[in-house]
Length: 78
Image (cartoon, rainbow, N blue to C red; front, side, top):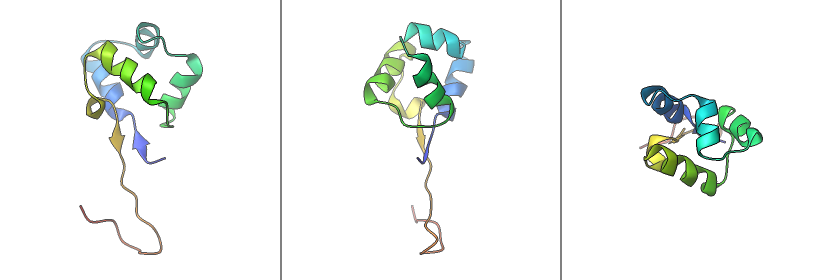
């Protein structure tokens, strides 16, 4: 999946909060945290809880990584 939670990890550093702190505060299951660490998709409900906990928006915790297909052999235009 072409998503990254790198903005989330940066935000946690800015807020001086650990991943364990976030997991407890947002009531996130350990398996879901593993998915986040692996840049796998999680439910919108989880993302909403994270945003509520950190008082932020989706764009502050997730980014879309554009990919290109080998058929076209070039990156997509913006």
